[in-house]
Image 1 (cartoon, rainbow, N blue to C red):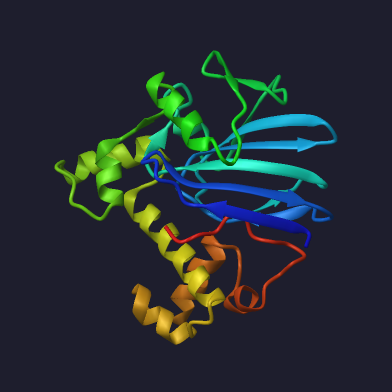
Image 2: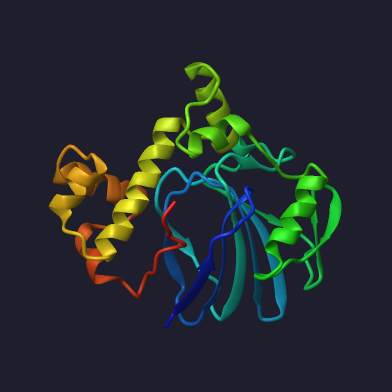
Amino acid sequence: MPLEMEHRPSDSPYVARVWRCRSDDVAQMTSVATPRLGLAFWEQQGQVHVAVTGPESKASPAPVPTYATFFGIDFALGTTLPHLPVAGLLDKQLEVPGATRRTFQLAGSGWRVPDYDNAETFVGRLVREDVLIRDPVVAEAARGATPSASERTVQRRFLAATGLTPGAVRQIDRARRAALLLQDGVPTADLVNLLGYYDQPHLARSLSRYIGRTTTRLRNGDPGEPLSLLYKT
C-alpha cells in the first residue's frame, strides 16, 4: 500500500480524530475539505517536522513526503489556537521550525512531541495553558443544538473559529458523509434523497468541490492518489 492510514475517535471534547500513517512510494494525495484545525507531525530521513494545518474550504492536490511516518490530531469543530488567527490558516499549513524527535515550539513555549496513544494528555496540557480553546457557541451548533445566540453572532463566531460560514461547514460535512456512503456502496440516487441534494448533478458538483472526486472514482478507489483523512463527523 502506498499510504497506510490508521485513525481513531477521541473522548476529548477538543479532539475529533487522532490518526497516523506511513507513506511509501506515493508522492501526492487529494486533501479533502475540512472545517477543522489540526496538528501534524512527520519524520522523513531522520528529520522531524511539525505543522499546524488550517481548515480547507475545498479539495486540492497535496504533496506527500515519500517514505515518511506521520501522526496527527484533528481538532473538534470550533477549536482554535488563539495565537494563530484562523483567517491566516485557511487553506494553508504553517510549519513550525526547529522541531526535534523530543520537542517542538508552540505559542512561545517548548512542548514534548506527543504520539498516537497520548494525544489527549498532550491536548489537555494545551487547554490548561490556554494555548488551545474552543468556542462554546460553535461547539453547541456542531452538536446539532440551537445556540443561545443570534444568527448574526453565530455567523461571526463560525468565521472566527473556522474561517467559514455555518452553511459552508454544513456543505463540507455533508459532502464528506456522501463520499463515505458512496465508498460503502450506497446508490447515488439514494444519497440524493438521504442527504438533501437537489439532484445527482448537485451531488456531483459538491463531491468535486469538497472531496475532489467523481462518484465513479469514489466507488472504484484511486490508489495512485489517495484521499486525506476522511471519516464520519
